[in-house]
Image (cartoon, rainbow, N blue to C red):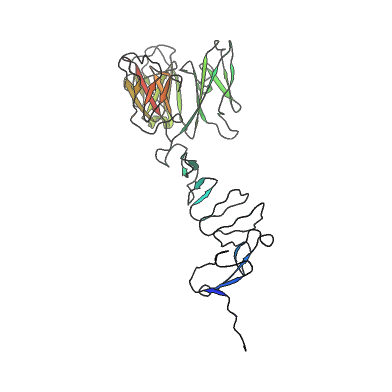
Length: 358
């Protein structure tokens, strides 16, 4: 036959790509006439290893096949995967458009805002949330990390379970001894109970008693302010300064015991105590977030907060002003707080559930 025409495999459907081994065998060519592209079935790092379809004229690592299986280690300078791609193990920089799932984690399709952090919902779905105080993601939970130590006789120095300083940032933190709030170094040398130093050290001014329970609470992603006062005889008014004066949701402690909002003090600036303080009483006022107040009936053990967004990462429970320990003193439900003492509380006990959010 004179002047024979040799035609290779081809398609006129735009965007159509041949697949190995269904439509293209090792070493075969194919053309997409609509797109003007040429494809070849070739191996990776040698014949027969990781055979796949590549577009001729571009980088040989521009992989267009639906499935690439490589047994062992392979090196790619660039790899463009079209469609659903499953990567078991990868050491590389990944540039992806759309939704990407790597090692079971589903990444967001777009960047977050400045100072936002990537968080998980516990099911592998990642998203950007604002963790610092102020605006940002509504209802984003603040992480409260608690550590508990038991003192030896006369012990003053304790290493906290969670660092209150990472070498760059100092995180808001509180210290309680046997449920009573202690005064930090910011209250002044004459009235303080402890000072914080290094990354995770607190030192009490006076030695503790054997078996005293020391509770350290570090707030990540949440900054609260505190002001400290030493009362004069009969003092009821305590004027606040700075940004704290503009807040309305105050927590007030007298000698380490938390007072009840609306019953023991008025919610305004200045803060007004219902019962005058005694001379030398230590008054601490902090700005916080949501709070539910309950008055127990005889034997009552279960209390339901108004918010469903509660967890051990964003909640504290007080009974008659003394902070409780989760598991030892109470458990968390959905949403509920249950006192673990089988007898329940005494009629008239005050239960305050404080929920912190960014």
